[in-house]
Length: 166
Image (cartoon, rainbow, N blue to C red; front, side, top):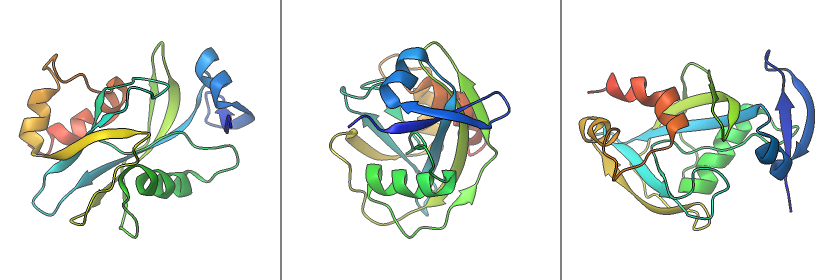
């Protein structure tokens, strides 16, 4: 089923909803979430997206997240996406500054968070094909490594946050 996604204007006000496929096809502005997961040692959880994802397939990412569904509260979307993608629930979320991202593939307003998690990570097989913990310094070094293609939106929105951890 093609989920309905809330469409935003430039002031982040919902102007309607469309199926996800239409949002992607027309690169319509929407809301999305991102959560940086760290362990108590300070490492960040890095994962590789499956090759079947509808945008940036097979790329590496250091935030769990996704599209906010029509009628969904952004905070609930954060909690849902973290549980779906990495199997993490019941964790305290720290709010980070919101941001906007736009390129030829996606255009959205981001609700961003961080958390600390020392429990097991369980990948959603449809979305995540690999993952492991990485130090902030190692992650920052990978940003410029062509053999580690990262999600440009995550680096654009949260790259400075990670650089500040080094």
